[in-house]
Length: 95
View 1 (cartoon, rainbow, N blue to C red):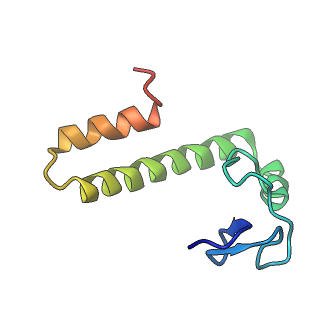
View 2 (spheres, one colour):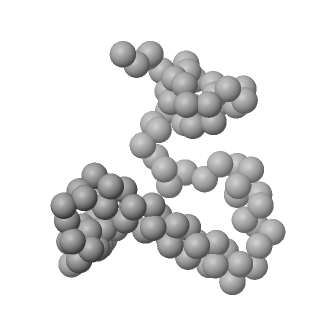
View 3 (cartoon, rainbow, N blue to C red):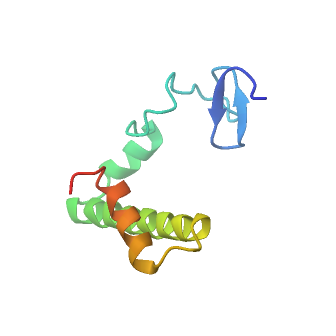
């Protein structure tokens, strides 16, 4: 059973409102679009081309991880079926 509070992604434990590093946590852990202040500071030093490359590399990494996960949980699926599922999830059904 999970503890009440919020999930700390740094140490994988549930905490009250402060993570294991002592920094306040977001109230809604589903808000993945919120950028940490330290990350924002680093991104401000990057050129637009560097930021675009970082974003693209994150996208590629997410696609690879999702592909591996889908293939693992559905070993009976063909590569085409796996790819179709990955595309559907990444595009949120917009095809």
